[in-house]
Length: 60
Image 1: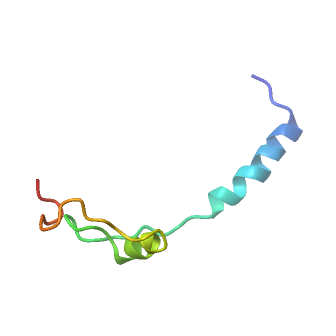
Image 2 (image 1 turned 90 degrees about the horizontal axis):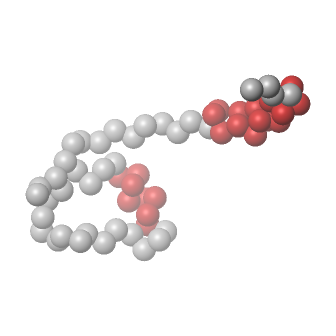
């Protein structure tokens, strides 16, 4: 497979900003609903609806 130089340069122009935009990994306690930032993320869309109220996270 042969690729032209201008094609490779254009691909890197598009991909490089994405590769440089790294978000930090948010840690949270196992068997919980996740980090508090998750609530903030979905708050603008109406928040979280718990499909099983009263069932603790991680329970079967």
